[in-house]
Amino acid sequence: MSKKKKQVKETTIEDFYDLKTEQMDELVAALKGEVDVANTPPVTRDIEEITGQAPVDNRGKKKKSKKGKEFDPYSVDGLSRLPTWLKAIFWKFWANGAVCYFIVWGFGYYLDTTDLLVVTGIIMGVVTDVLLNAAFMHFQSDDKEFNPYMMFPFPFKKFWTFFANIVYAILIMFGVNGIYYAFNEFLNINVSLEPLLFGVFYLVVDMACIGIKDLIVFLVKRHKRKKTEIAENA
Image (cartoon, rainbow, N blue to C red; front, side, top):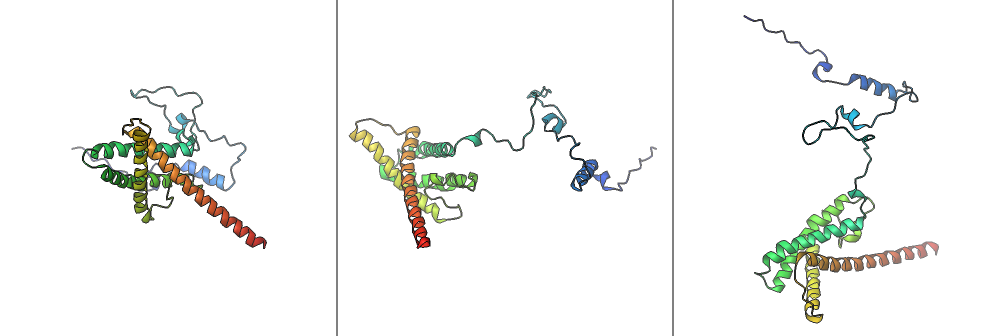
């Protein structure tokens, strides 16, 4: 009959967890000023040294890392370097084309022109308020760099913007329909209804309206600022 092995009873917290007590002691000593910072070796940022292993390729084999490849916690990815106007225009254009593909092409055979414009405007308003504007609000910084690309640059919790964006999108749809009508009837150019061109037409009308709104807001703010300066100098 075999004897049962005596289980070792954990008596300290180090027995429960693999604590890095040496590194903690070094940190405490550094905070107390007991470490000679001048003679302390710099903290490494080498990826292999940090992770303790070489990078592995898709076949599960270790591969040699590129010389000088270091971890930079403050590095900025390539997408963040793109200008704000390019990202805003692309997202809006993509959303416009997607709505045309799923709604205009999907219901075009079952609805007349007016009903199709209203239904597409409702869907476009919901997409603008729930997806586009919410994404702009989430990703923009304190500088509010995405505000010039929204008709109603207000937080998502402002519930009235949901209905305002729907009404606004329906009006934009009638403007887009006017562009198609002008090409086909007055210019005698047969322009087909497809997502790419629809996305461009909707974007042009949308940004033109937003540009007029931004100009009015700028003029009103400038008038108020001048009025305040005159009152202060009086």
